[in-house]
Length: 487
Length: 104
Image (cartoon, rainbow over the protein chains, first blue to last red):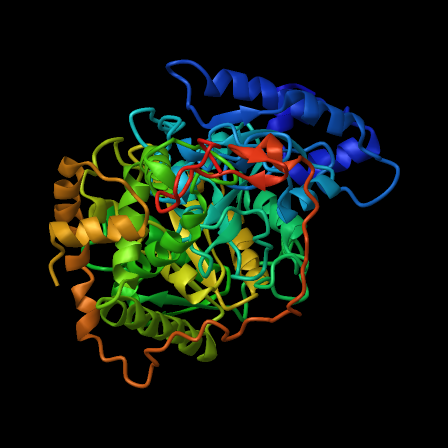
């Protein structure tokens, strides 16, 4: 089977063929490495991959025990965002302050991928410490959109999105704090999933905003993403915010047939996500998807999440506040960059000001400001109270009988690199995604069509720990749209 | 609640960030531009929502016992400066110099 044919097949099928001996154990890896070489490097490359470990990945493929154990990802290459700790490649978070840093331990999600038979040949580019929506904030250069190199792939997990969209891997890990998987998935025309807060271990995910962060999964298809989440989900004693809730079979509905596979499913359309200002062509694609959902048997109704417009102001208080605390650990003492200065304090200041880029510096200052004496009540405490109202909106809607919500993922398609100069304008890229992080509910983006050749994403959101219903709807919509999702 | 240059210098000091003067001036504009969008939160009727964030709500607590993570590389392989198993930092300026110059 040709490399191209291998990469065009669902990861689950290729893994099954490798287990059965029908495909060589290193064939998918070889195909992925060849695709990476073609897509990534050089002045016209994507610059999506930062670090590689070809020998390690080959050794892992060679060591697979195909006769024993359950290996749903046998021999499947998975790309990993640069803020997830790996022992065999650097973990720099796209930052100069961690240049060359190789973690002495591995993230729980990495251990789970390895146990499932995955091989890990590459780490991917990202906005520094996951702060950004375009992957323009990396210390290692911007990542380009696979379909139009003048545009951004979205962010902050833009490298992972780009390698999946370019066909380098079927599955990649990213991380979500305010939309950093779903937004780049929408921009790049692939599937991106943010699980429920607590569904996946954060152990080994470098902390940005601990009450919002969650590891997410990219897939070329709904099934690839479901398989990836299936492997990494579950409680972890090393993360006390992970929750011990049974992990159902996310792939159970992949072949549910019949004319009305969504019979009995109530889909809500929150009016706040469909503003009059929404691009008319984007609205057409969303309406088409809604008509498909109705045809599939879903009961579609309008609902309201009245505090939606407050999500960005709340997010950009809560997330920088937590970041200002989490990033205090990068001080030149225990690991990473050290720049000598005048005494201990001078060393701290020189290290941090030279190690952090402009956006990270801006957010640390913003976070420190909203937590400082005199401003804590006005900003942070009030933002936390409003955050609760945003969560209550979701609770009420799901309690009313709605199973999933359907919305646009982003207000625009992928924008031109360098076109968003004002920080707050960039922050508004997350307007439809940050609510899920603030409320802790699961959400995902899947392709629903294109405008001028650029992908558009539709977003599904579900109640806490009900990823299974979200995937049920996503599988059905993907099948119903067929090729229209990419045209 | 406009941010001033002094505010920026104050929070930069709290955050242990050294800033050049021209950067301080640009940050005043950037932070004020961002915070202007936050003012809408002051108008929100928060009703019964508590202003006191409850960090432990819904969180599973574990026993307060050490839960060491096995390190696969020695600390001196990634620490900027170590001696005798300790992380070295520059001498505090409040401490007098000794015969042992440099880090201590």
